[in-house]
Image 1: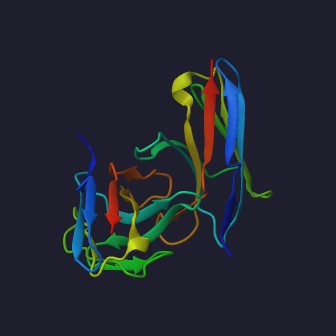
Image 2: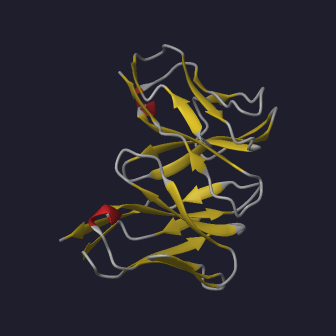
Length: 113
Length: 110
């Protein structure tokens, strides 16, 4: 089944403790992206990647890192999480052609205390 | 700057027709998407418009006017399961980068 798999689904952590949210897709998509979703603010792009070893900042990249060493994986790294990073996070992938919609992962609900 | 506007909330009754509007101002335009998102779940793709006009897909239709920076999503024969948020998104730059509106929460009652 074609899908984007994110882990974990839920995570509660403490301020400053490094964490990684994994994202993997099995559709051979070149384009991958991370979004956060907050009430009243909608989906905001954190980072995106157009291919292996090619990443770029989105609208809200501060406090996050990403890597794209393999085509299928695009982990999101929070080196020193803070409470304002409490949010619902989505990974998405798509074909490079503009008319293909994103396929989203199931989401990761992160709480930083 | 980049801006996408859509109403925050709408209500409708089962069997009715509802139109959700979206206006956009972006630095580029490679197409406009509509997504459906049920509470706590991932968004799912509904439609894509790149040329002016109406695209119909079953009970859902989407319209685009590029000159006006305007789109709408039309939902017919509403069902309770259509209660969800509807997200308007514009592909505006490199590759398939999408900028999303804040979403319209639709509540369908019996």
